[in-house]
Image (cartoon, rainbow, N blue to C red):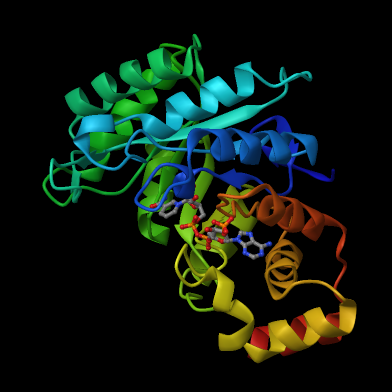
Length: 286
Ligand SMILES: NC(=O)c1ccc[n+]([C@@H]2O[C@H](COP(=O)([O-])OP(=O)(O)OC[C@H]3O[C@@H](n4cnc5c(N)ncnc54)[C@H](OP(=O)(O)O)[C@@H]3O)[C@@H](O)[C@H]2O)c1
């Protein structure tokens, strides 16, 4: 498995996104664990989760617990697995999503994540999304305190624009190691943030890289160039998409979601698909 860098740590160039394993439509626990084990078998050692990946507030933390259990029950060596989680989103009883970016909440959420993940320090802790009711400086300062206290090894942010990324990196004293933003063939407006991360040497983690859970299967139908290059190379349009992202910059580490072993196996193989400059140009223009 090819690797890329998060902070000083090398991780697989493709990560596993845990969300489809815990939100509405999730598979049963056996299939969920098989999917995580298939990712580890394929050489993936970077797994993205969040405390809020659950059906509602009633099973808040479902995805973190699932991933911790799956990693613990894996037969092989998992000492190099980096689990990235997030705090700052809440879930309400009706299943809707809320936000809480206050320092007190972030610190309490991190403590709960530490317990669910069963670790002394979280590998990568990401502030999930700016809360319009709380200044970003307050939320990111809480993450800085967690870093200073050794409760998290690395700090990241998610859904931040370029100005907010610079501000976060300043508050963290240059210790921002990852930005997780939406990026896919259907959603390319985060290119400026990707370019900024490239300049600063910060990992850029595209979320919903295949267009999101409900649309990922139709990627080839919606973007013909991905289907055409996939057909010519004998691979899926989804694999072409991930290879295209990897070619954008060495800081890019896509985190495709998966609820079946076959889809994460297919995605993991994107690290070995080298696209030509001509192919990349046609995908860029599509
Ligand atoms: N920071 C944020 O605000 C935020 C927001 C959304 C998501 N995320 C993170 O980003 C991750 C990825 O996003 P996502 O799960 O929403 O969307 P996605 O990765 O674009 O799509 C996920 C779906 O793609 C399918 N898939 C994966 N690999 C495939 C392949 N090679 N061929 C065909 N289908 C494939 C999977 O199908 P099967 O289910 O059939 O396996 C899965 O349901 C999430 O899991 C989560 O960790 C973060």
